[in-house]
Image: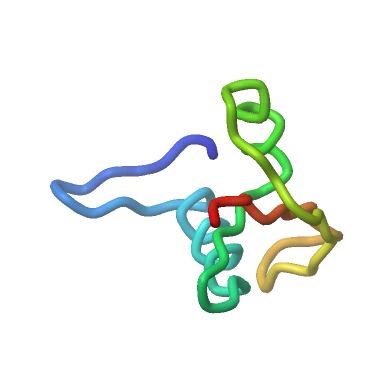
Length: 71
């Protein structure tokens, strides 16, 4: 979650790249969200599974990601 740049119907920027990196880590039938997004929506009825720390290409440090419990 965060700011994006928009050019007509396409979005660009660090946030878009980070979202792609997180989504690319998901296994079949799995939804992943960043730790930041989890913090913003966890009180809105969403349920989450395991949280893990990962390295995202092009981003420094470790990043928290969590599975969304949807099944």
